[in-house]
Amino acid sequence: MHAAIVTGGSSGIGAEICRRMLAAGFRVFSLDRAPCEISGGAFTAITVDLTDATATAAAAARIVAETPISHIVHNAGIIRPAPLADVTGEDLHTLTQLHLGAPTLLVQAALPAMRTARFGRIVLLSSRAALGLQTRSAYSATKAGMIALARTWALELAADGITVNCIAPGPIAGTTMFHDVVPEGSERQAALARSIPVQRLGTPDDVAHAAMFLADAASGFITGQTLFVCGGSSVGSLTI
Image (cartoon, rainbow, N blue to C red):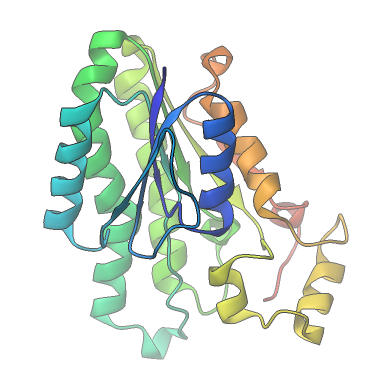
């Protein structure tokens, strides 16, 4: 049985990834600071604040002491929107730890077992905003950093049978992070959907489908890549 760590598994995209992995026979550990809507069976929810490096390292150590981890999907994220004049050092520090520090700690913990097995799948959830988006200085910068991590780790780990890839979602409705910025059912949401080439917003299922593809054992010739799941918004302009 494969075992996976999924961050941000309590709701939205992370919860859908957890459900799909459980259906595929994975043992799944969800790391999130919020209560989880999934329970029982091969699923374990661990409450942890991933912006806390010490707590994150402790949670990772607990998991790998219990079972070897073959898959990591780092989905947890926050936005902290602000125009440049209002961006704070605390914003930058917090998002750097969550988007870059946390996956580094998790992969470091899982890496010995992956190397022993000569197999691993690491998927980092970046964002279409990595290409640049107004009011997203800290978010865009750290999400772009995830792409750089994936490319670097892909080169370092390829010989060990470990692949590392990114998914860069566009606007995904039905997630707390999206609706914290765009009110559900608002005209703003409708206008945003109309601005996307495929004429709709994404869903957690769209992103989970991509995550399962990159996590598949048959996807071993794909590494260091970024898959935009964005309805075509990455090849045009986007205003949220």
